[in-house]
Length: 504
Image (cartoon, rainbow, N blue to C red; front, side, top):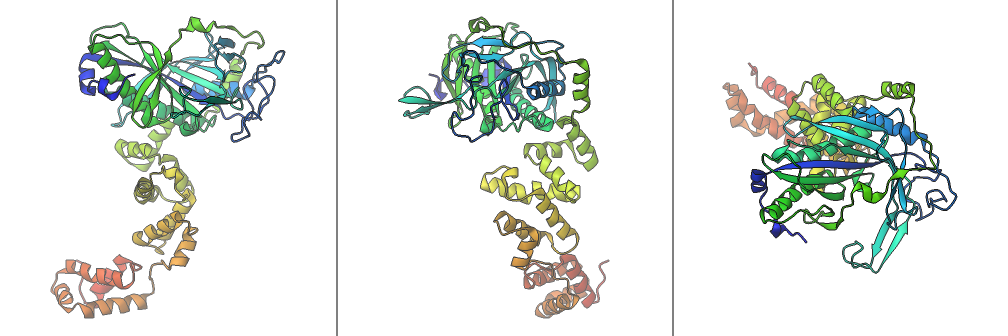
């Protein structure tokens, strides 16, 4: 087993070798029923309660293709700039695993529904990298195995395993890239950026929530190294079922260092599947990887070929939503921000939240300010994603409305947001409960100003002598007296007016 002591440094690995990647992403489609039967796909049901003779592979049961699944596959193919097959068919992929009740997987082999596409992805510094797509094909998911009694949750060391076939037959789209070359030291970053952009595309299409933490989107990271100057690819490893963007990047980076260590030591890379470990960021060996011929593919005899008409394909194309890269480019221009700012917003997962806040009535600058400032800080402190915070875009828009109307200043607005996040109610309810409105009564403000002047005669004399900047100290005194609930700009105006001094 490879450990972290069997690695060379990342820099040393890249000084001798070029990484070549291939990324295989499985996406669970959000259909109501399974790919080849009418069983529900709803999550959380009792184990094995959403099964039937078809998805259990019982003798004589005949499958029927889910039309929505085919439409979703075409949407994905078009969004990835693929050609859509005029005629394609399913095949049987034969292998024995206990989570495959039919003892084969219904998939597509040499005739995928979508092929020869590409996806442009943006890296952290705004550079665009094109990832070419080999194919996107339809298939079905397997059941779920739960290994009990061992220390790791894997089959090795377990006393027994439990099988739940509710997931067996759920529609999957597998998206396979062509070999990704030329990324060099940025290969792990490219892998992460590709999966992130693909996830955004999938969500924009509305075909899946693509929640990696729930297994709705999983990535297999294929990686090999070749010495500088050599054209032939090296032997690859395949790290299976990586389920977060960060882990995709870490798995690619680890495998680069591991491969380099093996090759530098005169060893041979074994073509195998590997498991990624979140706690250590390392991979361990799984099983020797089969070649395509080992699966004994043959055409599925129980399903007719899929032949989407060109009219249907073009109708789907015409109805595609604005895709993420085009949307970001448009918003960047509309908001008048830099590419770096947009990248920061995207990296923070704030774009949809900001857009929703604007749609709820906020101006773009205020929406960006609160999500990327106070709310990003709260998310970081609580180790949550922005969309997991207990505040909605509508509520943030209401806070901006209260600020713009003069009912709140920024300091009070931060307290309101704090109250909403703490579960104290809506912004208006928090304002009411905490008594946070700006003091706008001129009489009360004038009284507070007079008291500040009387309590600080030396500062008042400086201001009368022309040192207007000294007014800041009196403004601070008034703000303290009003618990931060005064309009600082108005307070300064009143101070200068009472002292007979002009701002200019």
